[in-house]
Image (cartoon, rainbow, N blue to C red; front, side):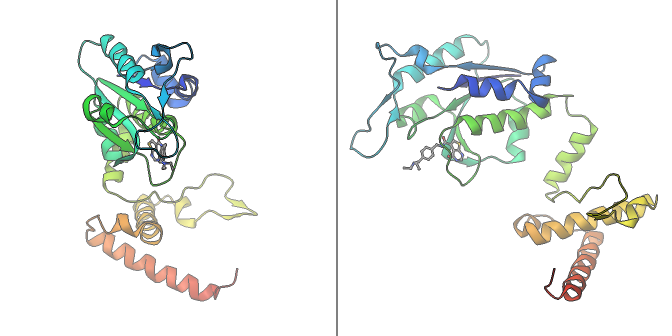
Length: 255
Ligand code: 9D3
């Protein structure tokens, strides 16, 4: 897969795409991340890429010219057409489902905005879709592009191995992960739950599922509302609620 990123801060994207799972995917030739700076396509002596908005208001906008030429340049390097995605606070929210869909593409072009954004005519004519990574304000699209690249990159690496496809299932299963423990068994910070050292794999699976359900109930009721619970899940969640209530009463609100 090849991802081209159009950005005024190519070194930011380059440094992100060089490390960890994404860096390894690149080294293995599974993924190629390239940057293109619209400033290189500015035509004036000051290499201007922004201008004041018509109608007034605060801040500046990225102008059409350098973005159009950068896009054209990036497109020329490809045989097949690529989807152009603009990272934008006005976009639809990124989900793991969307990440999986994007990971199947042969090629993507990510466009990062700076200042107050880009001229609307770029979005209307040169962009296929807009994606936001969440409801908070960033200073530009680069960090969001890095999020998209990371999420896609880890799916390229190892071409969707067993653990990952299981994870996809559990994500579309829509629950949070259960707690995890490693050595030492006993520590000042507490003990490892007995069941995990019992060697009883049916019990362990049941405990993990119960914890996943319970945590999702406590922390992400919005996710829990969207999953369909089988008979075992309903029983486990009932048990968790019961244990949770008992623990809270025991504690009496004092830590
Ligand atoms: C006057 C209002 N503007 C500033 C508060 C709106 C605004 C313009 C540009 C807000 C943020 C940005 C820059 N953000 C992104 O480019 C961005 C983003 C984000 O801010 N949040 C979540 N996802 C994304 S994807 C791109």
